[in-house]
Structure formats: structure tokens, C-alpha cells
Amino acid sequence: MFKLYRAIWRASAGRQIILIILSIAVAALAAVPLEFQRDIINHLTTEDVKADRLLRLGAGMMAVILLSLGLKWVLGYRAGTLGEDMVRLIRQRLLLRSADLNETGEDVRKGTMTTAISAEAEELGKFAGGAFSDPVVQIGTLISVIGYISSTQPGLGLIAFSMIVPQIVIVLVSQRKVNVFVAERVRILRNATDRLTTEQIEETSREIETEFDSIYETRRKMFIWKLSAKFLLSVINGAGTVGILMLGGWLVLEGRTDVGTVVAATSGLARIQGPTAFLIAFYRQVSANRIKYELMLELFGPNPEQYRRIKRRT
Image (cartoon, rainbow, N blue to C red):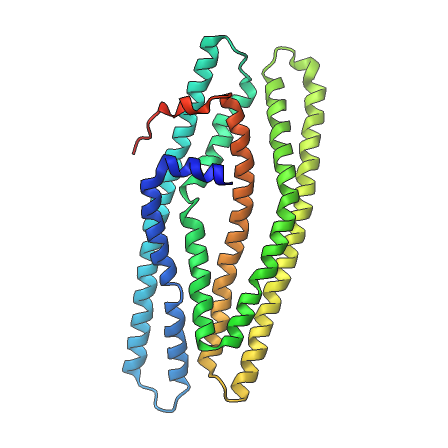
């Protein structure tokens, strides 16, 4: 993983720094709407409800939402264009490698190179666009929201935090197995596409069909692991929501907290489920792209450094 991130940083350090700064700003605003929501609900439950204060709170909440959405738009645009730039750069280097192989008379695996240029470069390049900013946004959002919930009611914050740890364990265990299937699928697909480019297509068609069956079987096993992990994660999220409502309701009945805090905590719980799910998917994406990156390096031979002479265009 570190090798992959070092390569991404070398190719796009300046723009990654800008994306990280934008990500921190977005994460810092994540919990602010929850405070406005809490104040609005608590104000509505008082006997002296004032329309002007309600309007001020609503306007303030909307202003924060618009600012956050604006920052997310800029972040998404810059990350997307950076990803496309990385796709272009990878394809340029693969084309240069193909040309060098032709000049030296070395064997060119046309099917493998075609797959790398068309599909694998697309996946790796787009991943590079958000490799740093995406986890910063989501981890920052988790810290911001859980910190806010804990500051208003520590017990509710503890429930929110306790949901994350078992999910991390489940993903780490299941992803190790999925990574094996990812590498196996890529190798089988490359081998099949290499054979499709040979002249003896009729003779090898049955063997290729067998390899397609192997890809299907590999994907089937991946689905079992992924869906089982997703089921367990959903159970944890459901239990967390019930726990927040039960504990929060009991604290309200005991007079130890207010309704606004419980509603804000419930909304906050929904807010952290999104980043948690994203980080889980992102970890899986990192693991898969790490394997694809290592497999792509094999195409450049023993000295991949020489293909860095292509300059990235902005």
C-alpha cells in the first residue's frame, strides 16, 4: 500500500496538498448543522417560542450547509480532474513501454497490455484522484461528529464510537480473503486476453472458456465474503441506532439530557454511518488497487523508473 501511495504522491504532490486542505475544511463543518438542529428542536419544545430566533437558526444552518456543499463541489471537481490526468499519464507510460518493447524485439503480451491500457489504467488513475482527500474527509467527519456527540452526551458518544471498532475488525478479516480473489481474477483475465490475440483462436477457445468459468467462480467467492461482511456491518449499524434511542430516551426520562440532544445524536449516528461505509469501501479499493499496481509494475520490466520521463500535463 505504501508503495502505491508513494507513487501517487510523486506524481501529484502539489495538487494533493490542495485537496487535503479542502478535505479538512469539509470535515470541520460536518458537525455544525447538528448543533443548529439541536438548538432548533430545543427552542420548539420551550414555552416561549420566538419566530425571529427560529428564522435565524434556520438561516444559519442553511448557510453552513451551502458552504459545505460548495467546498465539496470544488473538492470533487479537482479530485476528478486529477484522476483523469493520472489515467492519461499511466496510459502514456504504458504506450511508451510498448514502443520500447517493439524496438528491442522483446515479446509483447498484446492482450495484457490492452487490458492494462483500457481498464486497469482507468481504475488506478481515478483512484489516485481521491487517494488522500477521500479518507481525510471521511475520517475527519467521523472525528467531528463523534466528538460533537460525546461533548453533548458522553454515553451516546460511546455508543457511536463502539460501532466503528467491530466494523474495522470484520473488514480487515474479510478483505484479506477478497484480495486473494482479486489478484487471481486479474491474472486469469490477462492470460485469457493474451490468448485471444493469438492466431490459433479456434484451438484455444475451449481453454479460454474454461478460464472464463474460473473468473466466474472467483467472483462468486468474492460475493460470498463481501455480502456476509455487509450483513454483519448492517446489523451493527441497526444495533447502534436502537442503542442511541433507548439510552437517549432513558436519559430524557431521567431529566439528564434534552430531546434536542437525542435527535442530534440520532442524526449524527446516521452521519457517521455514511463515512464508515465509505471508508470500508475505500479500504477495499485501496487493497484491490495495490494488487493491480503491483501487477502493472510487472509490465514495465526490471527498470520502471525510466518511464517517468513523461511529464504530467495540467
